[in-house]
Length: 423
Image (cartoon, rainbow, N blue to C red; front, side, top):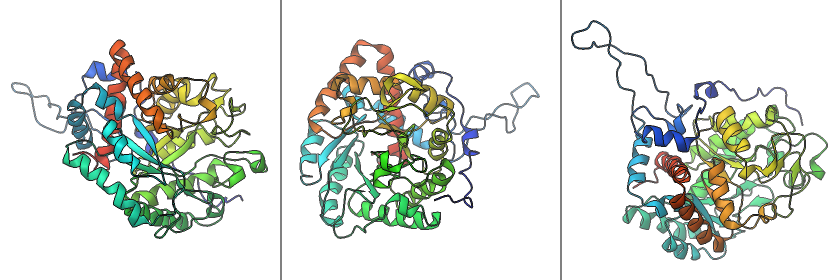
């Protein structure tokens, strides 16, 4: 349903971002990860507490009449992240890059996973009818134990979109309409609903919602669009329709203290296959200049700093040789370079998804980080140790990749600092 009265989300905030001239891994090596004047992944942080001002603000140099430049302000979140990074060895840094599935009907397995390694997060996979308070009784101690040990607190993530995709449906969780249904109303209602979702998630100890969907499904194609349109997961048929509602969902979740995730970059609205259940899913139409692609950059620049999730489809007009999650052209060049996204980039499931089954689990983790990603999501917890050891082994053998791990860990830890998840 077209809604011309809604203006597209402003792109002004993105103008504050400094394009990444070098890959983050190289940049961190060159500057030594210093806190003063450094912003996340080398750029000024748009919409997240102001910008850096290198201009002089008064004072003179001794013996001269010229003004002396004042020091750039230090980003406290970055400084906290650098301190946390310095306290982690290589294995712990690599572990921060993994978000590992724990069955919704067996949350106690999360304790064993966190004893296995200080993973960056746990993803509650499947469906649960447990009450919000009962879920929180298991998940909140994960955070408490991490704080007591002086470790970064793991993200607790879930898929609470609405409609057919809702991890939780028990007492304390309201049934949320699909995005398509929400998109027929006013964005203020979407924001209020998202705030309510966030409040229930916080009761359950969940700090990261893998929502909202920002994919654009063109008019008339929803029935044939297996991953999104078939389930009504889209807010609209154009980027202009999707923008205000996706932004409202990000804002509402943030008001409740939950970090949002906009997905699935560069968009799953034009494919027919579902990457969870089909191999070699391809998009033949989406290009780097598509308005639906630019939308992800606009949403990532919101003050709430949502994560961006990559798709596992192949985009023939951008990089026909690799799934988006493994493509430097998609992640590093387009998302980070052209769109200026310097925050957390999380993969779609790289554990059980059929779209990545031809790639070894070890290579799934290393290729995603090498492409410019931050957090590797695996719904299958059995693959987490293999992925972790692959990241460590590659970093030990390759200094450039070790710098990439350090850079990704710094970005991940800075997001945790903003969310109050660092000791």
